[in-house]
Length: 445
Image 1 (cartoon, one colour):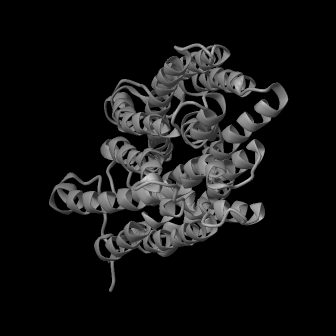
Image 2 (cartoon, one colour):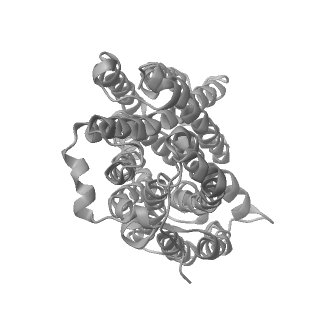
């Protein structure tokens, strides 16, 4: 069954109203569903690792943090390949394939956690395959960026990303309930509960999504972005936004387990939930006022919040400490979510401006191709936060007995990111890439 669309002009108002909007929304809906599952599987070991000792596995704290971190490392690396997959195979086709690949980590998890004598290296290998779910984001965002007009990209990309990010909250909140339902501890259910949904996502993508002929390109066409300064600057900024979100999400259950052992780890789902819900608002706000100024304000607040976490941990034996710790983390997640939406919205705006400087419009094939490639590339770089942040906790605990050193390092990085944003995109707005819509007319990024 052919599902290729040859004529696609989302920036043409008549085409958009007559045809484009309905098709774009349908593809966005099923993309969100598939991406939701990808994120869920990507972060499934964040919950499972925290409960392995309770199931009879004899593992050190360092080994547990590695089980949490390794999916982030593999997922981030996979994103580089996933970025180019929609352009090579078609967005609909790759969504089907990437969904089916999720059956590998779920099957391995269900089998291996049923036996406490399973060797650690096998658990580590199974956790690594969960990284397939992390790759889905890059291909999904690269694909969806083609479907929407410039004036609606911020909201659409924000919704697509938020739908995936909510998968993190879902796995952190749902899995603890599923594995303990009916009494006892059944870790294999953490994987089994997702398998029917994975098959459903693949079926829905096959029948209801589309491939865009306009999105076809070669690797050589897309690799030009690596020579562009803005690709690397935006990668730094996205490390500070999405890298923070995914890293904090992965590390929070085990951080609670080690620092506040009397508390239930399932409460960790609140962080990624509020961060995910905040992300579309960040995209819409960036559409209206400009993403650069927004994230430049968000980064110092994130820096203050991480210092606040250090203060809470310093008094973790006090009765009020955990409540303050959790509330401060919620603020940090909300800020990272808003900044996520803003920073991701900056990419289409920057590359539209580059196209305008060449005398091309937003429908220029090179503009669309490079925008999609950059969205995937920076998401890949930032996804290493899912590895680095849990490992930073691990290293900090090993060296100092607690995670405060890691948190202070993150705080300093946010200040650096704010300075970079100001220097590159805010200080001289007349000579830097601008956003579309109101932000463009008012001279803001």
